[in-house]
Length: 184
Image (tube, rainbow, N blue to C red; front, side):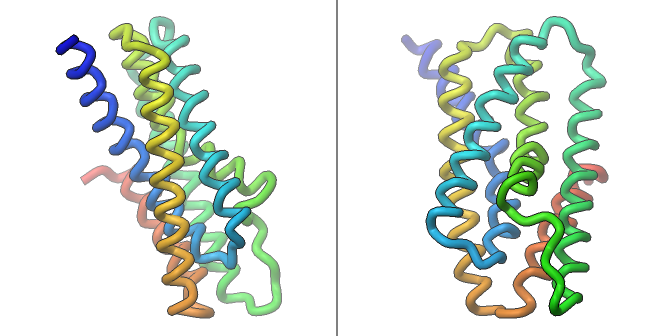
């Protein structure tokens, strides 16, 4: 039983660390004027992506090289940079609607961008034969809760910052994307 507890603690720590990017992106997305229903859907969508991406990684873990994890990180960073720049530019144009918003296709892009690192971790966990159901539950729940937390905090900040909130949200996404590309 102690091996299971040890694995659970390790997986919870990993899930929390992986969910922090969902929290950060949630802060940025929360700067949009979101209704509670949208916040709920965004959290669930990102949680689902944090379940199926590591599952895909775990299944493919024995077949893919170590370089794939680096490629996934770079792709995720580039997506976040693109989204951040788009939000900043959108905030500078008063009457134009944002190209990517956290609904529909834009939500799928956000969810994919924050779950690519889960794919990489899933590869590693697949190689080490971690308990699949335990991994998926930990990753999905942590990502959902952290996304909701980020969205609610971002929503409160948006109310305080008004017109500058979208630019701040874009800056957060841009900074996080740069952090993924340029680890310090």
